[in-house]
Image (cartoon, rainbow, N blue to C red; front, side, top):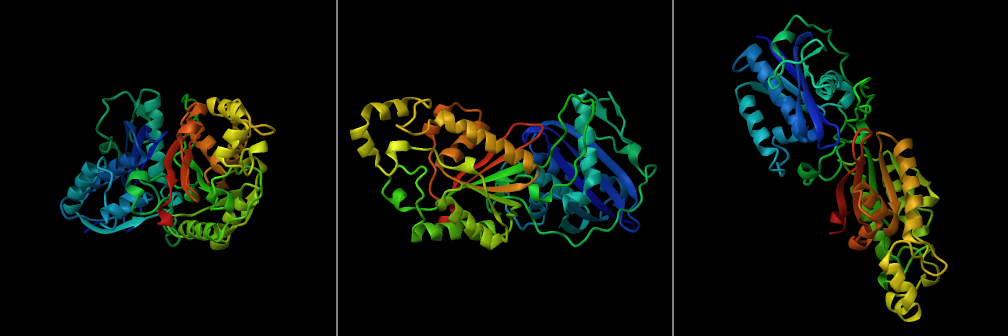
Length: 419
């Protein structure tokens, strides 16, 4: 009896954005391709596209081997694999119907394994998904063999790809890497994101009117420093070089413990030059074995004459200046820096990090103003939005940047590690 291997993938250029999936079915004995399928599915998320790829692969095996056919499922989506294996709960109700459909198909087969594989070992399915999205960008429909036509959309072109399109067996992959999706497993159903740590060389589309397709984000994890004496007393704390309190050091260690465990996998740590941020970053560096880089543009805003004062003290001594500062981002504290000015340097450092560490997961350890600036920019919100955000000490936020789509804020002011 023939047994099969499914390799499936899905992607979204924007997450959500124009999406598509690809699935490959191989003969498990020799690795030869016996079927391949792909389809553009309109605007959807990565996770939806990945589930659709799995469903297409399972359907293809049913068509080839019939009821009870033996199949191993291998995907680079940790979320889909773990949910289908029953190890993770499905928290995103939008995925539940797809999971139920895939489960119903799987029960008609004999699934021997649900295995996560690194993205670089899922290139065939990834290529098919990108071909389908490229075709859709031209107003065409993907068909087997890598060509496109204007046939009716919807059903994936499976029949033409059976048996006659045979590929050699792939090089056996090395032992499976651990899961690298960001965020705790309990949260990942809502917040799952493609992880930069497992980024592989990506297929590049030419002449489609699209930027190069990027399924893997450049991820900036933004960590605010821990508690200082000034934060306890709610005093303006800008360029003053306060140290962490004992509680602040404990907060830094709690964040470090979280970030050093799966499912996190940091590639780079970059810190503000100020001591409170460097101490926080150092705690993560010790846990992860990563060196800490320092970028001066990640420093807090300069509060000038207000440094070390409470809000009440500033209100009494500089009432007109404070009113102007609260009224708009162009006003600066006496001898200090306006939010508008800070925005320019924060934008510059963000651009450097995203360009320098494309496809990586970067931990940025900084302060309230730079973190709010990056979130505001990702949301394309006005500078006035800074006054509508709150960040706790040692909180985590996550922004993902796609070369061919908008930035996506995936998490904000997360303090789960401090509870």
